[in-house]
Each structure stands twice: as structure tokens, then as C-alpha cells.
Length: 245
Image 1: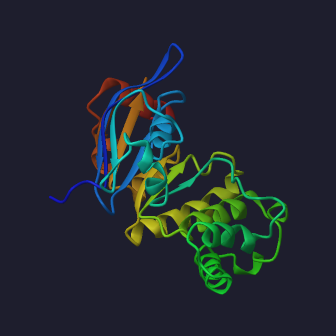
Image 2: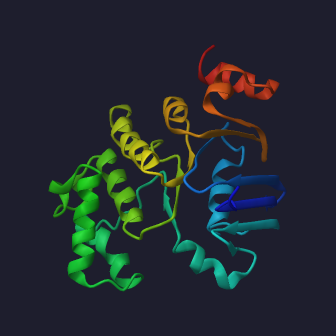
Image 3: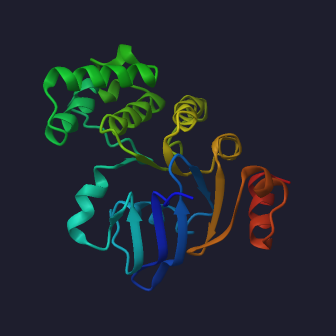
């Protein structure tokens, strides 16, 4: 077995008196797709944000692609390897779509304007909206904006992609277009951790499903076994509500 690309060991995180993470342990292999589900407030997004130190954790260790996050000098090195897509699109509203895709490439990756533009257009083709290169984000639908946000993250050539409920702010008819892009990334072998309530996507695209509640990982398994044979009562109760079984 090769070394996991993400290693989370005994991670704790407090927000005041609230214990958001209570000793989380998780290994993620390269090219693995892990979908994290659970009720609101279970620690899913907090765990994701700790992986690239958008949140500082209080105890434990996280190693990403061999880089130890406990050393604060390593944070930027980890962030250069990890792309993140949020619930809200976080695009620059005053910049055209193509400029949203090229800005970080030129500043952080030090790419020339022409190379950054070419990569940006390739990625807009990949997410299915090359014709939107010269419009502003406010002229796009929510689904289109989220696809631009995915393309922007991919433009930095990340080894890992983190998705924090990427479809939760979208109208129902726009969800599929974003999930289709994510499913294609999974097929291409991108290492992904996805916090999502989309059970159909989890069933179809995940290698492993993690169920979190009250700051701990309650259960994990393959999609088939997770949905058909959950072992923990808390998991069964949750699935009974979200799947109405």
C-alpha cells in the first residue's frame, strides 16, 4: 500500500465551548473519491477547512502529500497542492470569467499571459462553457458560476480537490450540471473529498462514504454497503430521513 495522500490523526477543533471535531482520524489514498455526509453541525465542513488550514485545529496532525500542516511554514506549500470549491462561488465580480481563471495562474504560478489564457480556455471547454469567457460572473447562472469556480481551482494544477457543499446554493435544475463536471473529474482520477447532501452523486461517484455526526466519524464504507447495510444506528436513522426509507 502506498502512503495516503491525506493523513488526519486525532484532530480536534473547538469554537469556544463547541467541540466541532472530536478526534477525527482519516486516511485518503491518491485518486480516491471520498464523499462526506452528515447532519448540519456535524463537523464536515470544519474537517475540510482544516485540511488546507483555512481553520486552525487545536490538536492532532494533518499531513497532505507528505507535507506536515503542523509546521506553519508549510501552509502555502499545501495550499498550492489543494484546490477548494465552496458553497458560494467567490468569483471576482469585476473581472471577466477568463480573467478570474488567469489571475492566480499569473501571480502564483508565474505563467505568462498567453499560457494562462490557453489553460483557462481549455478548462472552460472542460466544464462546458467556453462561450462565457468574456462575460462577467453576474451574467451567469449559479450553475455556470460554480463551474467557473471549479475551472479556476483546476487552473492551479492541484493534486487534491476539496468541495464544500458545492451545489447547496444552486437551484435544483442547476445541480446536475455541476455534479456532472465533478463526476468527470472523479473518472479522470482526481483525488477528491466532497462534503455533499447529494446521495445520488455519492452512490455513483464515491469510492468511500464517510458519515459524520457530532464531530466524529460514525461510519465509513463503500457506497454499496453504506446504503444497503449500515452498521450504526445513527447512520440508519440519518439515511432513513434523507432517503425516506
